[in-house]
Image (cartoon, rainbow, N blue to C red; front, side):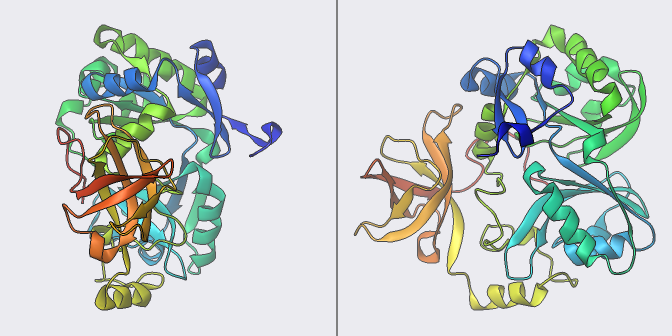
Length: 372
């Protein structure tokens, strides 16, 4: 456990306390885990609109003639396919076959990109990319100067409509614009999120954070907009099968094992590419699968997965009771022989094996598909 005096506070920390949030340590920060209840907040985002303060996330600006070559070198996806205003999901492979982090790559201009990384990995990612920056791309870490508000849910574009001249409802998934928002010029508005419910992520300089937050809530009041905590963020992302770094992917899991072959492009060179090519050729020993419970029970991270003989075949990485589906759902690594859809195995819950089966993602179907 991180001691209290080492934890950072997001710029709107006091606002969240004022709103009644329960603040907990997460990724080196005090973060709001919930304001009311996880289920209520989950339902708000699935059916209406809610706002997450995810200002703990990291943002790096990479620019200059060597920006794209550096990004191509350190990420698995093909960033050369990006055009201005487009975003790509990718990951940073390490030298021994695992993942340094997963991230988003924004192409702002031909020689200007923004990388958005996980809060717990900001320093690690920065040092890793910097160590690979042998050709001198310009790198600026703007994480501590940037707030990020995720306005998520099917009513998000309506709630934000009055704050900008951008046609938010017409924005494609995984695109962004820079525009005036809430009276502030040059705000980056991104049609992304971690919920599968649709919506936008708004990048705001710290000095405007409170103003923008309050204007979002004023504009969204007719749509019953609410603040949402990390508890609901986790159940929402899990219903979509989105990986969480530190649970479903980490320094020891390969993108191929994690089902991220679609962002691992062998049409270019990148860190440790031969290892992943060999892994693809020889076959995977384990795979990350999605499963839902057949027997009643709630799977949790680190629970053992066993076969009908009681032999260990894997481990749960993420699990919960789905608020939308009212059943236990989860993800975990299993031996490849048990990874096909409808394969059955058992999750050991309080020393009792409970039956589950492999299913295709997403668990919750009424949502936009993942971007390529």
